[in-house]
Figure 1 (cartoon, rainbow, N blue to C red):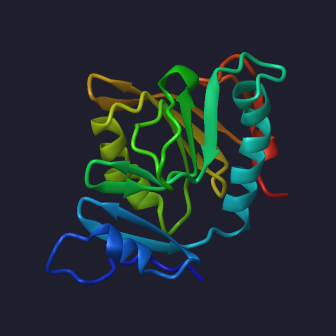
Figure 2 (cartoon, rainbow, N blue to C red; figure 1 turned 180 degrees about the vertical axis):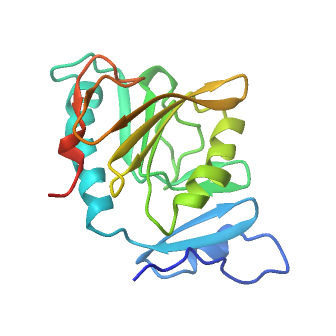
Length: 191
């Protein structure tokens, strides 16, 4: 059963961080354009793609094993960007731009974001969140749809995201900003 990503009351004022933390821990909550959005943890196709991506990207870029290193890559970090609070599925910062926060959240916009699309979150990911990432200067965004078995690679150009590559099914790809390694898309999909 698909549950829509609800706008959480109150609707008479912009949502606050207190509204967000008051929600149950089993929800992923974000504040986008003053609205509080909450969703359940993802289903298997989403969780599989998210986990597999970390196993492929993490070693060569976060740890420098079999790749160039130089990145700090985190799963589902809470990032405060102005009044917006986003929780992308993956975020990566080039090490020279990364500062460890003294809080439970991050305030520096990442260099790369990956959103794994679910039926209940796809519209928000493609509209509100992409606009926030563009405003904050996130240079690269990946949109992975594990049901359609697609990877869209977007690059920020002149303040807007441009799709620079679209990949499907079992392609083996090199995708910005991690083109130093091959990514076999088959590894992201549930069997």
